[in-house]
Image (cartoon, rainbow, N blue to C red; front, side, top):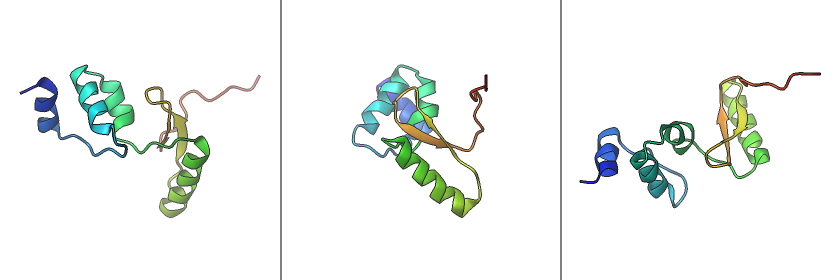
Amino acid sequence: MHKCDEICSIKGMPRGKDPDYEQRYRSAVASSDLGLIKMCLGKNSYETAEKAEEVARNRSSKTRMPLRVYECPHCHKFHLTKQPNRNPLKAA
């Protein structure tokens, strides 16, 4: 059994949204890229910030939980988070 097959079968591979998801997940596991696995592969991705903002507004209005959009450093698409911005821009 290949290393990534073993890890995926133990941890259970999260379900992806795009066609190449399984390959990207297996690649990340094989290279031990935990950042990619945690920050990107288990989340919905949006091509534009505007689309992500729209989804965030709709979801927030239903759950009353504020959501923030951020650009992923791994896939360069946009994800949602409930975490506050850790690095807000400071006014001069």
